[in-house]
Image (cartoon, rainbow, N blue to C red):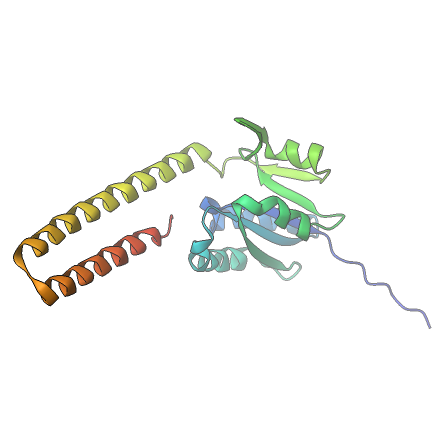
Length: 202
């Protein structure tokens, strides 16, 4: 009796910057590429901050639905951008093709970058393809800079406001009341600062 050997289907591994997570326009383009080449799709989402996994899981659920078709299977993995290379190596299989954005780069030394496609092909020896026009790194850098500025401005305002409040408490209260109010004020201050750090960078 003859047995048929199962052939593992090849995949398109998409290195997805977090700013493109949830893009249905990009998902439709990837679907057309994968369907044409009879590939399944693995999205490797490169997160700047892994504390945002819940938010990005919702975005990727939408993107996965926009990519999935009868002839292909779609999954996604959330990766810390600092460790994306380890995650790519762990998931890559011979025959897979890695898809990146034309504008994506990778750090290869102090103050040196290389095009992602060249790095994948020349250094990792992985077949790579690119898409252009979806990723805008300069806009992403400006967005991150503005978010950082807003965070630090908010943190300074909170610290200054609570410092004045604590001085007022010191001057106006005594004994147990002073201690209790100071502990309460400091607790609220730290809660607000902690909340600021958890605001999604979207």
